[in-house]
Length: 557
Ligand code: NAP
Image (cartoon, rainbow, N blue to C red):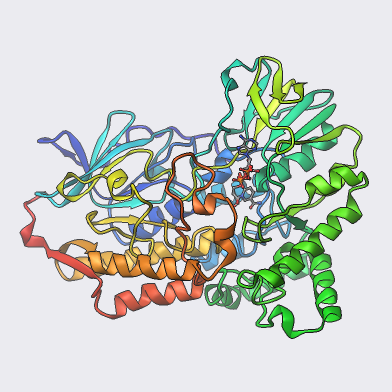
């Protein structure tokens, strides 16, 4: 990996002497997968592009999440860029589910290979973006005091980029080492002989617990809601397999793009009750043995039929009971009261086994809630747990957090906070009425979180690129969805959400983990393929869902 770039004041963009701002065609906010591809794509189209990234380098969540055990839970083959056949051939994945260091290495390889860094200002947050109605452009300000003017503004801010501390008093009092999964130190952290506490048992907490449990003197796992986790069954990829994949990348990508999840994963058209109880049991056993997200793909109706869902939940509870030796701990680890898969299904290599270790203790925060953080550790109703290290794996202000973290001011001075005060609204998860030329990748009301984020990012950037091309070719200065189109999309998103069990759990998907956040599933649940079809239809109909303004209507910028 190259040394972290600073690149604070790129001077190659012309300065507007009247406003003191630098003039570009496209501002891209964020340099994760979406922002990297956007920067590349728009540069290749001949646009002057300026990217901004709060992190010290490219990578988004994979830049920040350096905690022990961090690993992707989709196959690496799928979880990689598809836009460059050269990069597909040049890069070789070592494991079926790559760990964070390998992912970051890949991301850096892509950034180097495409020479992306010179377009991106790192360690810089955008603080404000204001639509200039007279000049038909966005004025973007950063926390370094720089101002840029851009025709197009791309929010590639990601669905999981604003980490959330737990709402527990006393956090600042803790005198030990406080670590946040999503802001993990760049230097290795040692746990040997230490008393370590982990708060949070979602995908992140589970990955941390199974790693830190091996090393810590004592590990206390503070669990409020247990998650369902299934075996990942990670494997080293054999050279023959990799060669076969490289020969077939084009068709692998095509299948991924035409699937509901944007990836090559087991999927079935078989309904749960269409086969005998014995066959069902066998299919679930096979899926458990195969690992990955095979279980979710075993039957077609697991997110629609509560009875089928409960059978699968009970199957997993049975596995927990078989694995965890202490029956009281096993019982506490068994999730109840919400459908399996309604929270993000987790994959592990030894999570339940970790609780058989004598140094690992489960603290049930439902039976014995956390009261406060003290100087020495975590105080629950029953007493204080003294700790040397406390780790927060307490999730994110998902989907909307990053977009509401700074001021975005659209037409007529209306802010995004005002527009979204009752919940995130968008058309296709890509644009918003009242915010011309402002695009989102993996935005709210798209399929983000429910399908492969890289496939969605590439799709969204390509859609935006096509819209820009349409505008440039037709002398158009602005694009914006109509209020009717946006409302129709929101109605569809809502109607589809009522057919799934995803609304039946308190998760970041529905905003339940953030105090005072409007509640509701702001995700398109119709699947990635259907989503692509909707986005394509919006274009094929001559952009009938959108209004444009002609370039001559804008004053010279
Ligand atoms: P999360 O799923 O939102 O889990 C946060 C955890 O913190 C929950 O267990 C929550 O309990 C707990 N928590 C929050 N406040 C608490 C409090 N005051 N007291 C006790 N517990 C508290 O967040 P995450 O684990 O970071 O995962 C977020 C998403 O990131 C995942 O859904 C996934 O999409 C992604 N992710 C993916 C991978 C991967 O690819 N392998 C790895 C990590 C993350 P409650 O549920 O009771 O609120």
